[in-house]
Image 1: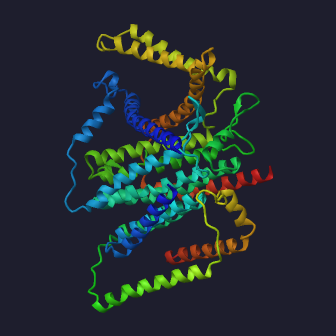
Image 2 (image 1 turned 90 degrees about the vertical axis):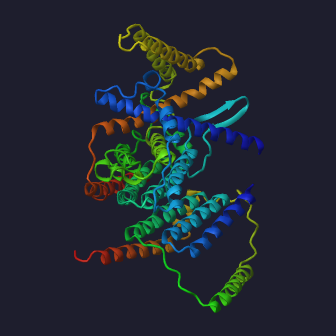
Image 3 (image 1 turned 135 degrees about the horizontal axis):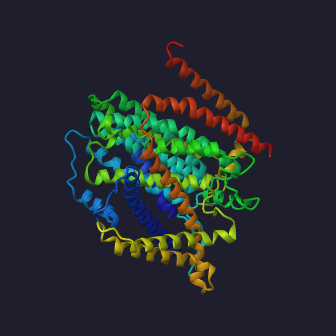
Length: 165
Length: 406
């Protein structure tokens, strides 16, 4: 059951990712990205990282992508016209992509330390309490640095968007 | 494993059936209450007192021709109502309706699934359900629909912030994100009569948070006075202008199911979930007395018929008998009855209290629709960002400080 769900949603994630690149209309691409994020959230849920799953949906699918869609709708962007690509790019591109993915996969396999097999439902560190404790003790400095970084980004956006104050 | 799947399927079917029926009858109740506010009688022709009106509405909506206008993006046009109704049904799955029950040896919670981040799941799904409205408005290829969709996304994003912050303060006091544990932590009474709900509970009563939550809930469900996405005098019908037949019914159902979900969320977070309003010896009698009283009043009115409404002579006593029967079911735990009946009666009491609280919030939704005019869009945005948001941040800070000091 768990394995079936894992492969189902992994397949959906990959399919949505491919669809994201293939679609010419920006709304279709944005929706495919939401599909990727939704299935990632389900994968987190399967792992037992419930807080991560909810955060993934709230932050990415619920906030960031809504903004994307909002902007696409406001600008009323139409479908892009596909430019004629040379045959050479197609002939070389796909093998190069496969080779790249192979190298990445190999590197991840080789560089990662020998991890234990994750059993579905065995991981219990995904609750809000556990994540909060880690975030405010062990990873306090990175957390604060990221917060300041995001604050600076927000201030920058406000300054850029507001021409006269 | 098999029993788990079977129980889950049965519960899911039951919850979906009850919820959709409830949503249909919510429309009937809304029309009735609005009518009585405006001194009319409302739906009256289909069935006694219009009780079969939802059924006739359903048949009408399903059998009508589903028009797909020319030049719409058909895939997204059909996807939008599907998303709307699917998401609204998903989020109810983490809401508990009552305590653990023990029916025929099977122990189960009255809840589809107890995710330990239940509140966040509901927030996440309400955040994602913006897409239904935005996509529906965009795919219709109609300027009014597009304006409605854009307004709706802006409004839902804006009011999500105060709502999340308002929800955060009872969560700070409960120290958990599971709705069942939140409801369980609100049992008990101060001085024997003030219920320990978060709206009254120390160190910081959550009255302000509850008000912020209610206002944001009205905006999130696109209800009056925040129903700008479908403001009929400006935008025809807003994002669902072009929808007809079953697609329109899907949007319509989703709106009412969302109302039920958000009322249930408010009940669990602020109004003590299924915990009774009164301390124990009185609390067991209240459901019995309420239903018996209603039954007796209806029986009395059955004898006082008006000549223009001849059917009342039969329908009022019938409803009265039904209410008396319900009162009898609720009195089961008070009587010496054998085991399966006793546990069923005991399981029904929490559902009564939960339903009464959810019903009160739903009534408030309808009452306000009959009372308040609509906001203007700039007023709506200014209200959210300049008043509601700072207030909720301040309230959260004060609550956090008091909880930390405690």
